[in-house]
Amino acid sequence: MLAINFLGGIGHVFLAFLQGAGRFAIFAATALSHTVRPPFFPRLMLRQMVSVGYFSLPVVGLTTLFTGMALALQIFEGSSRFNAEGSVAWIVAVGMTRELAPVLAGLMVAGRVGAAMAAEIGTMRVTEQIDALTTLSTNPFKYLVVPRLIAGTLMLPLLVLVGDVISIFGAYMVSINFLGFNPATYINNTWDILETIDIVTGLVKAGIFGFIVALTGCFYGFRSRGGAQGVGAATTGAVVTGSILILSSNLLITQLFFST
Amino acid sequence: MTGQAKISLRNLTKSFGKKEVLRGIDLDLNDGESLVVIGGSGTGKSVMLKCILGLLSPDSGQISVDGEDIRSVSAGNRERILRKFGMLFQGSALFDSLKVWENVAFGLVQGRGVRRSEARITAEQKLAQVGLGPDVANLRPAELSGGMQKRVALARAIATDPEIIFFDEPTTGLDPIMADVINDLIVNTVKSMGATTLSITHDIASARKIADRIAMIHDGRIIWSGPVSEIDDSGNAMVDQFINGRAEGPIKMQVLRQ
Ligand SMILES: Nc1ncnc2c1ncn2[C@@H]1O[C@H](COP(=O)(O)OP(=O)(O)OP(=O)(O)O)[C@@H](O)[C@H]1O
Ligand SMILES: [Mg+2]
Image (cartoon, rainbow over all chains, first blue to last red):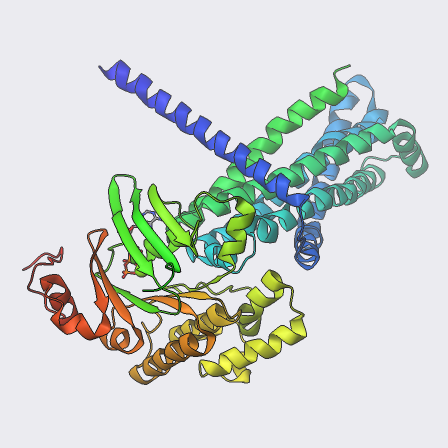
């Protein structure tokens, strides 16, 4: 009896998961179909770009700066065990551009921007502002979702590019000042190893992560119900789901790019 | 009655989970008429309006506007039909990220492509009609009192001069004098614009003033409808209880008595 209840419980969770995934897919498809059909709202898009891009600069900059610095220390320590201290420069460069900068920036932006989108749209949902949009002949997808999706997809790569530079700079400062590297050698090592593909894959990832962050933020906002509590739940859901989707799709993309 | 009804509802039903809210609404709204729907709290009045506006999808039944069944027309046609409507939401539903005048002008600017400078002039006129001066135009909705928000929402609902306007509790939360101003405004709007209106109210004085016809909803159905002149001798005990505001009667409120 207990076993059956337990299995039934798992079944329920699994079904709820499938239902949620289906709704998410439909939401994504609807949103995408609206990105190509007018009317467009350039002013709103610009405002979202500023809020996603410009206002995330400090948090992304600090995150990548500290990570780049810590990475330099760790790799120096680790590689000195087999006399390969020279690899600090290129491991930092490749590791940050391909992997850490996009993932960390994605997660930080999910926490900052995804949450804010879910909270704002969620509040609009529970106070019937989204219904009001519809009655004023304005499609909520075009007015609310499309500008955010585009801003997320375009701005996160820019943030990551800045993050790449800052993290390498951070590692450079640590290496020069504390680890006794020669500045010219360090820069040469970085330049010699770093390839365009490292940076490009990082930026492609960033674009996809930006899309994911905005999409989950809007999705949870749209689906929120029942006042302040519902908006709170939407915010949490957006951050958790957004982060998990970023980490899992990161694995998938990495495999696609570098499996050959 | 000549011609077809502006809006007609046939056997409209809507449930939320196990809770049946609308159990078969039949209602006709004639062109240029002002219909007031009365009924207890939670009987599905707002849900009915949202079904007509396509904000909720009914489980079954027919909704036709000017003879077109909006549940079976294409999405493009539905959009065109919904352009005929203006709606005052019970909770005002003002856009809190926009200024007051931008709220009022929203349907003109985004919906009809009117230039912002022109729309602003219209918005200020509409605000004046609901007793709000130009000093309010630049404030945010959060800076207004509840009653002022309601009036802004009213101005927004009428800003595009829609053919059909729904007022969900237009006078709730207003002082008696302002309530009467709003009643007059609704009456005049209908007359001057020739608009067809459907209002929901608990305020019987307001209903008497603005209605050509009154319909009462109870338990998910329209239990009585007739001209406003007949409301006092409807012959329906529930209507009598409601308009006289008596706790005792055929309608039982779900409250615990000590
Ligand atoms: N989105 C929804 N999800 C679930 N239940 C809902 C929803 N909207 C309304 N209801 C339920 O439907 C019933 C009717 O709600 P509605 O808002 O239409 O009442 P009303 O007649 O407008 O009441 P009032 O006069 O207090 O505004 C209520 O019991 C409410 O709980
Ligand atoms: Mg209501």
